[in-house]
Image (cartoon, rainbow, N blue to C red; front, side, top):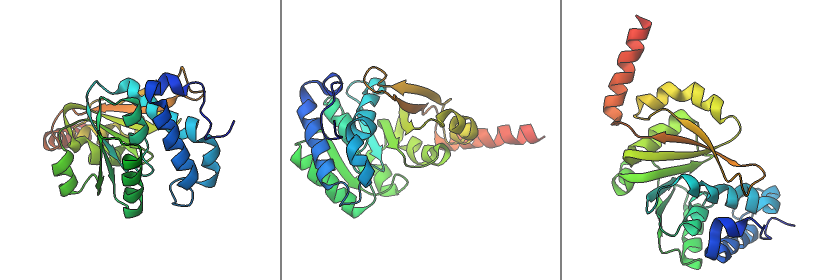
Length: 230
């Protein structure tokens, strides 16, 4: 089986939209390497390592949520998530023009009416003004957790959820960056697995709820650090 052949578990994740997922895989397999979206070795593992790996985070995304995918790149995890969950409204945010062009083409080709593409970075005021108040922000292989939280948590409504797709060292990253996450308004990070029923290696995610405003949390973090030093 090659990376562009549909695995048995795909139907369980995508349901009656599995053909759209398959079309996305074929597009990525045909054009991803030449357009600098994926490495040559990734073509053989598009389904498991990239598309299903992304789509299974549907398990932790609330119904009818507004989702912002930061640093979307090839459309991961935003496009597989949007295919698997048509109830979601998904905005893909990507700074590089050639990748934005790719995302626009995919959205049009697959007729993903619930997906919007924006060019920019999460920390830019223009992007923040357009997507703030989201229910969920996703990010895959974008930045360390401390920096990622500073970019993404301000985009969330109070009680909204950052879903960061991470690797095997997620727990170590959480321990290292816990204070920085709290300083920008995040609650206690939780490490969870998604897709255990369909993936040989489940997707590891770090979930962080926005529990307070950035300004307030920053003051509290500085006060706590000062008390600790004293």
